Length: 317
Image (cartoon, rainbow, N blue to C red; front, side):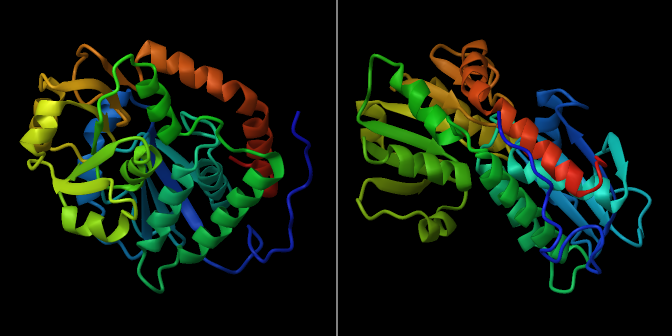
């Protein structure tokens, strides 16, 4: 059982501070919509934040959320999707943000990528934005909660990909990863020591600047440029992308249905395609059971971290 303690009150942040505050937040997540509905909402949310000078858009694998600064200037979030739930007040909204960043509300408890996604959302805010200081507040609290209660996933998403691929009898020399974000890069780096990795994305130039290739085993290409030699020799496929436009989905379907591919591991928020042979996604029963087993040692730490964060904000959530 994780130990409990009163949250620190002397770091210069929190509800008593003079920095920016949240008026309200609204959200869609797994408690309000099915995974399929959430997946369909991602692209409109990306295109509809409008560069707001008062609000924050948070979009992770399993949620779309809007946080509005005090004093609230908009009655609804300026997004082309309807957000289902509303939380009012800085303490309740900031508590939610910190618990999300800590990984207490993730499919895989304590996973690390959600912390980076929350930080990225705040990093995108322009200078002088009233919520920039809130990012420092919630990320510090989330980091302290993770460290205090040892809240770290035993099986993170990149390790999940390795586990699922490792269950196969056949292991081709090539691995193809579709995506250009944190998860795709982490999978490429995690599995790059075992085989030749090809990372396919819509923006290869951008990805080449951030994906280390010291071993010479990772090649970044456009989604349509997988060499015929790789197709002939065979490959495993990991899907780790978002913003699935119809055209992008068609390109991925061709890779999935290619007769030379072996296993497919789909780490997208919702399954990219309907079930295929040797196709495992996050909501496949076998994968769900694997995640549940991996979460069991972390449940108490997640519960204690969540309670600790809530107590910091006076128990409001």
